[in-house]
Length: 246
Image (cartoon, rainbow, N blue to C red; front, side, top):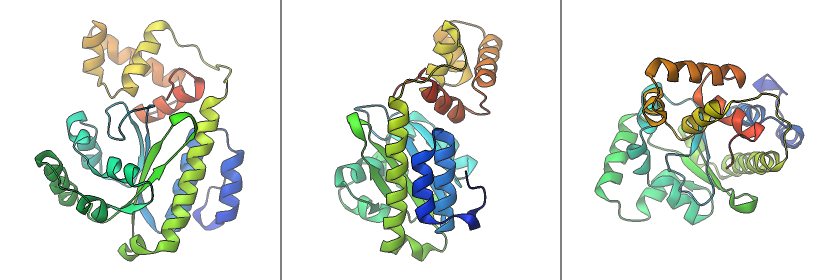
C-alpha cells in the first residue's frame, strides 16, 4: 500500500482499493488520498443493515476530529440527535452540511446538536451517501482546508467516487468467508460484540454480570487477539474475521 501522500495518483488509488483485502488498509488509503485533495477531517460510518446512520451500533472510523468532539459524539443520545447523515442518505447525493440543515425544520435536540457542532469549529463540511449491495449502506463526511475546497464540485466528485469505491470493496470483503486466524472464546465474543455496540468497560461488566477488573482483562485480551489498539480497530478486525456482521 502507498505510504506517502505525495506518491498518490487518483487512478492508482482506485486500482489499489480493488486489490486490497484489509478494511483498515482501505480506510487508510482513502484517508491519504482525500488528504492529498485537501480534506482535513474524515469519517466513515459502518452501519448495520436497516439501521440509521446515527444509531449507537454504528462503527465510526475517523481522522482529524478532536478527542473532545469524538468523546461527545460517542454518546448514544447525542449522536442520535445528529440530523445530517439521515438527511443526506435520503437526498441520495453528496450534500453540503449547511444545505442539509436548511432542508427541513430541526427539532430542539437537533438544534442543540448543531450548536455543539459549530462550537467545536465544525461549521462547513460535505456528507456523502454510500450505497452497497444487500442493504449495506453507509455514510461518509469530510471537511476541507482551505475551506473553499468544500464548494469545489470537481474535488467533491472525486472524493465521493473514492469513498464509494472503498465502500463497495469493504462490502465485498465482508461477504467473503474468512478463515479465522484467531479464536475467541464465547465470553470474548460477547465482549467484542458489546464493544461494537458502543459499550464502555463498565457497561460490559454490568451487562455480563462480571467485575470491573475482569471486564478490563477481557477487553485487553480481545484487543491482543485481534491485534488492535482501540475499540474501532478491534471492531473492524472482528468484522474481517466474521465475528461481527453488518
